[in-house]
Picture 1: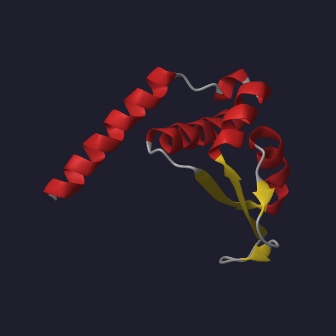
Picture 2: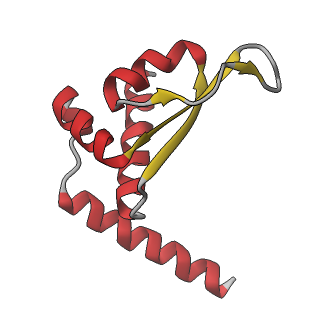
Length: 103
């Protein structure tokens, strides 16, 4: 489960790089704030609150992509993103845009 979660975070970072995003936002369980703070340098934007279904508090967190790049290189080689990863993601995003334009 942890590996799948980490892979989704890595995929999100590659998509952000491929889409030339400058700031990132995440809505996460309050219990997961430490992960995003430590691994990506995110900060909490608002107080945790209950959202449907209301079983646990959700925190909105965010960070600048330059801080994320620095932290992901320093913290964990799993999150290391190569230029080839970004190029492949840009091609995938372009393909999605083409499909959307046709539909």
